[in-house]
Length: 309
Ligand SMILES: [Zn+2]
Image (cartoon, rainbow, N blue to C red; front, side, top):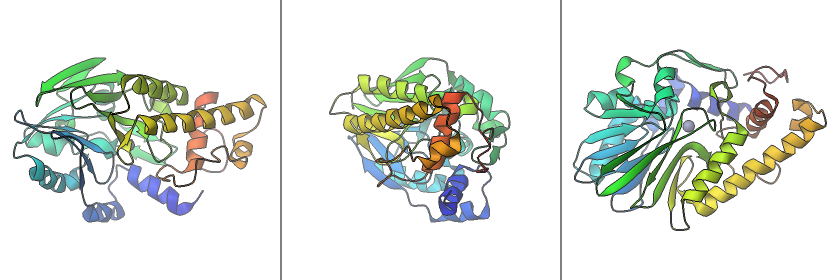
């Protein structure tokens, strides 16, 4: 494991805002990507933020960290004078929702999947990242929870919010603006990287591939796609990402069927052909371990490769 990569993955995933992370957050710049007149993407530190602006008020999909809220607010003011009215969460992981409380305190209603709310109430463990996440404050919790789907009608568009089961976790929401023809996948897609899949909380590699099939079936070649992590993408980007997922999955599954250990599978480099130019936010070794755990029903931290985090 490349220690710099590992450190990056752990820091970015740690709810405990260490001095280093606090410093990193200090340095964060928010980049605004205009997609249509009413829909934008903000890139900062953590999950990509989807934005709808218009007369009905501003809606955010995810919000990164409380420490960058002022910068997010400043970026939003550049595109709309209206306040943030709704904050939606793609999942409950801290790099997506740690601004919930701050936005709620300034008047926004937080909307999330019902299992995200449950998770936010208790300690969460990510042994494969070596971290524990303490409960969120009550003010961070959603005031509206979704089980299957919801449609928001605002800013002359319809935003379809829908649950995708057992993919990155068991509490993922994906989003589609019908009129703007813009999708936000949340962590179902790390378009230029390898995904973190939360196996302890119902995620799976096969569910992630099934999620890609479903999302791909909903869009056309003019759709713009905001991934959970990585640059703005499209149908072709999702198709390539799906190809990476299925190829690595099949390579790992074939070796499992021959009785090979995780260490042996790692040795064979099952991500070959996909590493070049790919962000190592989630190191390839961790992704292979996740696929292995998902296919063998092991929990993170059980397989004993000496690669403990
Ligand atoms: Zn994420």
